[in-house]
Image (tube, rainbow, N blue to C red; front, side, top):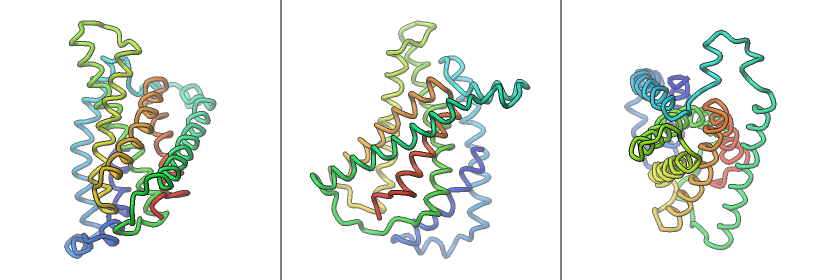
Length: 241
């Protein structure tokens, strides 16, 4: 899943380069080269991240329960609860619409300014949404959030991850999630305090939601919420035009 998702981001990354000052980089890189490079890199990095993530998340009482149950041989109908899946889709839609609403309010009160470049079209954004939903949840929720919760448990010498510990790990992870998105925004806007604040706030709101879903329902449901909210934001109602 991690490798496929990483490769799926290629159309979006190439579209971004075509629309920005990085277009010259495409001359030295074919699609096949990008697929091979992304595939090999993600296979190595993904294997390490997922192994560490599953190991650490088990210690933090988090993780990917649906995947574990499915691999244990249980029927598909017993593993995936339709109500939780539909609830995750609904939460993803509401979250995407909520962030779009906040962006419209902010645009009226504190305008970000004119974009330096156009945002990719719907199809590359759809691929990017699929890619981010899988890779970012594995990296940030399965890996980083689980690690932070485990470290906090070790520091305060407790075996149980209380609500306070999990929320602390969730919020710290969401802040890191927001910070990592700042360089991406530089393709479209100058890095003003308003732009940086918008990126961090938006991703903290979405990140803590993904973290809560991950905590309550596991990795797959967090991926679904992430993917759906990104589709609403960047495919159906992209704020970048």
